[in-house]
Image (cartoon, rainbow, N blue to C red; front, top):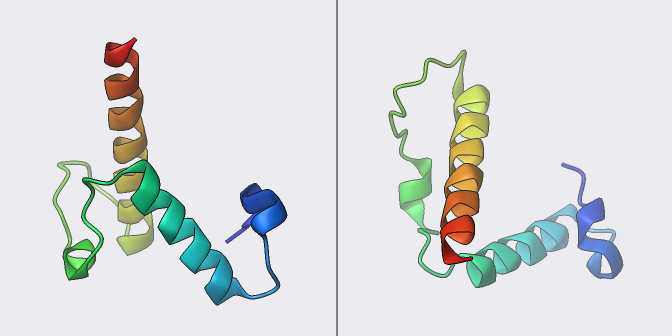
Length: 74
């Protein structure tokens, strides 16, 4: 994963970078689930070619949902 988006917080450790990223997600989305439930496969009704693509689809759905909520707030 490219952690360049961390900017000045970027470190030489992938584990530390991931922890910083996870912390930012928790701060940005305080109501989101960040526990073992993330490992459960949720059926989105969208066919995928495997777990990697399913994760990508789920991330896009979360992002689009966030955009919709943000636009309603304006």
